[in-house]
Amino acid sequence: MKIVKRASIAGVCGYVPDYVLTNNELEQMVDTNDEWIVARTGIHERRILKGEGLGTSVMAIQAARGVLENTATDPTTIDFLICATVTPDLIIPATANIISHAIGATHAFSYDLQAACSGFLYALDAGAQYIASGRAKKVMVIGADKMSSIIDYTDRTTCIIFGDGAGAVLLTAQDADEGYGIVDTICKTDGAGQDLIYQKAGGSRWPVSHETVSAKEHYVYQDGQNVFKTAVSAMSQIVLDIMANNDLAVADVAYLVPHQANKRILQMVAERTNIPMEKVMLNLNKFGNTTAATIPLCLWDYEHKLKKGDNLILSSFGGGFTWGAMYMTWGYDGF
Ligand code: UT7
Image (cartoon, rainbow, N blue to C red; front, side, top):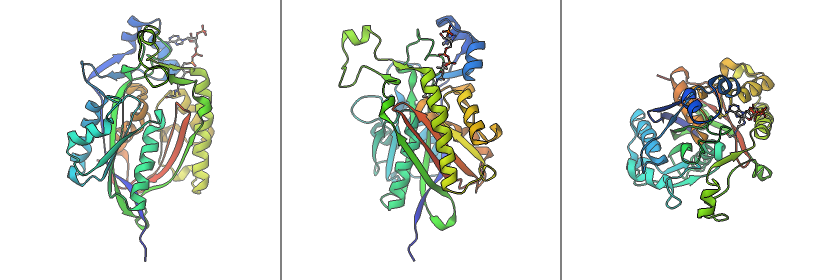
């Protein structure tokens, strides 16, 4: 009988830098205040990676080493390592290559994936497909971003939201009839949203120049209100779709694990999907929006509450536009 393989998360670890950027400190930098930020976003503080020459890989390596330790995994047994990020250390080589080298994943091939805030979900899907096809048995999936490297700390509409961090999971192959692991994924993209969140300069269309730097075009721009509305409707619909596709009722779902962009977005998604807020993982109050790292940082934070057999729905929305939802059954008791 043919045994179908399914990818299951065997361990998770997160890493956030020590420096805490509070709302009070932001009040000294831009025209804002703690009350506005908390009421409009739910964010109280975020972490910032300080230090010259330190890139996203510094955080990703810590998270990846943590997963190896938690799962007692020999790094040379990793077949594939994928790093979702919009803030790679360098343009060439991929940050994933730097991470593989640092953790001793000498038999892994590795690459970066850029899907903005949906990067981790897309990367998890890619890793799961390699396992399902038999190409890989162990895959490390990382979401990591040093958003502070592309944020304008004189722009109050973006600097209050974003933070730095990294999260990593190890995917291993399970027999599908054991009943654990990633069951179904929907990924969506709509390039019509390309002008609503973007970093204009630094790519091939507008390479770095004195002019682009003077015009502050290496920073993230977003049309917050427009993105907000689209995020609410797209995330709500895709969560409903994946539940319907898999005959899941709200009672069957232990947790919704959403990308952490704005607490009000998550409250609206919860309302539209009838998933109570107690089942919605939330940690943006302390980490803000860490782009590709939000979902694995949530899994890391809530790991101790998770039980073998819990059904999770992961969901994201971000620049591109990119969005998605994933249904998985958690494979171990948290500790
Ligand atoms: O992760 C990728 C996807 N990104 C998202 O999902 C982000 C989605 N968008 C958002 O989270 C929200 O749109 C923001 C948090 C960015 C902004 O919140 P908002 O409730 O949409 O505010 P707004 O842009 O409608 O601005 C309302 C008012 C404006 O003042 P006026 O014109 O009404 O006088 C802004 O100038 O708030 C003002 N404002 C601020 N005031 C104090 C904007 N930013 C700030 C600020 N502090 N930091």
